[in-house]
Length: 275
Image (cartoon, rainbow, N blue to C red; front, side, top):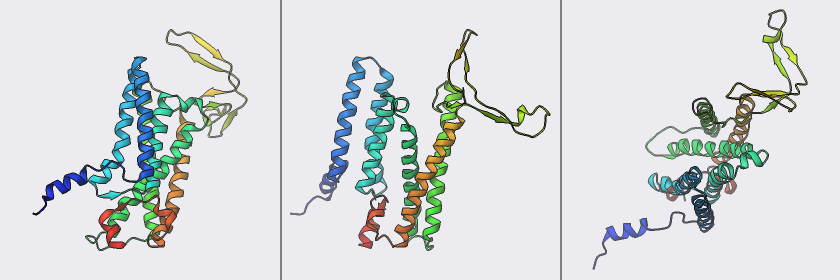
């Protein structure tokens, strides 16, 4: 008696989200922590945090769903990094205020984001480069440059988003920084183009909604997020460069590097053909 191919397909689709045991363990652990956080904030009636928990649960499943739809396989190491990144950004960063409480938490996440986005950009071009549909073959250096540019573009678009949220919704996604000196041509007493400095700024003045002012005893003034934006782009640059170098040697060695293979997504049918 012949087997029904439809049932066989249904059985295949019924497999767990993450096949790798280490990835599945991390996923289930993070999912449990998110659910506990969600229940906790339901009792506190903190519905904004409840929404973030729900969003996190969706994001934790999203990598597996996308890879299935695109017939792509993510290495276990890359999957775990993505899952931990989502949890660190949403649950630890936003809900538990690690962005404020933990020094350089935002810097660390932007560095990882630069690395991950470079991996995505590299994979998109590398898949085309390996496809039989296209006749061209791109050099390892070109692939590395494309991965770097893709990551930096995503980083810039995110900074646009943060700036828009700060301007239109009054948020503070671009965290302010204390600056103790100013260098500006606007301060040139001659009205020329010579940069004039004001150093050792010791106090900042806060203007409240009712028009009153408060002198804040800090060693400088609060900028409007410029330093935070540039810092984020710099560390995004570092993360993008690190992956681009890894991707370059991966292609240079024709996919034989074990270390690089842990971070680079691959098309499943191409994997079978290569192996």
